[in-house]
Amino acid sequence: MSESPNPAPPQQVAPLLALATTLLRTGRSGEAIAPLRDAALLQPSNAIIQHDLGLACLEVGRIPDAVAALRRAVASNPRYADAMTSIESSDRGFALTGEESYLESYHATILSAEQDEAAIRNLTKDNPKQHLQLPALEEFIAQKIRLATGADFS
Image (spheres, rainbow, N blue to C red):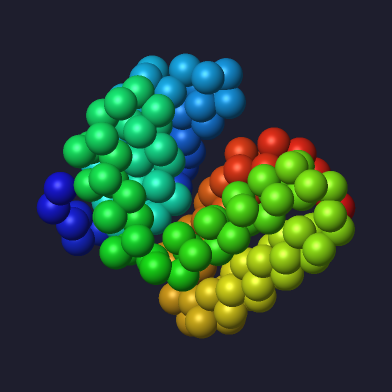
């Protein structure tokens, strides 16, 4: 997948992600692949899209496609991959054990993501084109957290 010089604006990608998220939440991973692939073509360096595409491919046994998409996600943003793994691990740990320490890790990771969003907002304040993409980034992160946890622990 070649990197496009100008990624598509968030309003072009949002409907595809909304459809894919609905399909993933209802256990229809195979059907989510097409809208995720279309979104990935529009925004090839979006780690969240690549991650979700990888997970959808994994669910239906398309291992080579899953590995490729997950590698693109990590290459696009290694820190994102670490944060999502931490959120998912904390959620599973709490669900399995009921130990509050897992929630502390979950909340710390969420706080870190919020701090990263604030830093990105500050770094892009002088670039209106980038700054306009922040609401979509924030929504992608929020959707990913909701999808990873399936619940709200706040």
